[in-house]
Length: 151
Image (cartoon, rainbow, N blue to C red; front, side):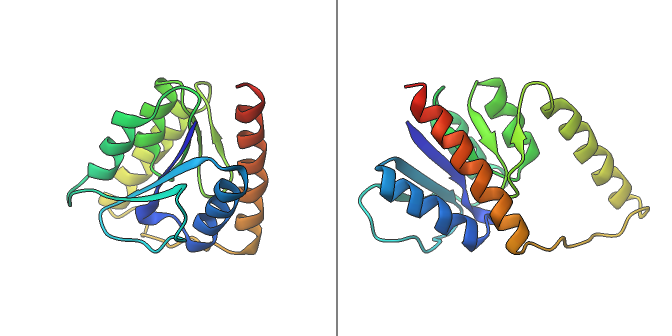
């Protein structure tokens, strides 16, 4: 089992939760990003610096993740492809992507993108705080425990 982290946009608090759990449970974890992102110096943790460019880190994860792995990403198209490949996927807010909900999430994402492009909706930064961190931690622990029990 491997934990795959789309690390380019993953909040530091989430990366820390993932790293602590991986070290404690001795689960190989790969943080994939276009640039070096600081992670603890542990043999079980790997920082995969992939080439620059749109979707390069996503493709790195897609090419390597296998059924039984867990992925963490806020990228909906990446999540859709991973779910299609039977990978367990959650985002940094603790939402679990499934075959039942991923198409709807992808449609909403595309619609919102279209609205922003034509100026109907302004770009907005959503806050990421303590509540979101707690929701992620609970979902991450739940999904990780399920995967470990199924092995």
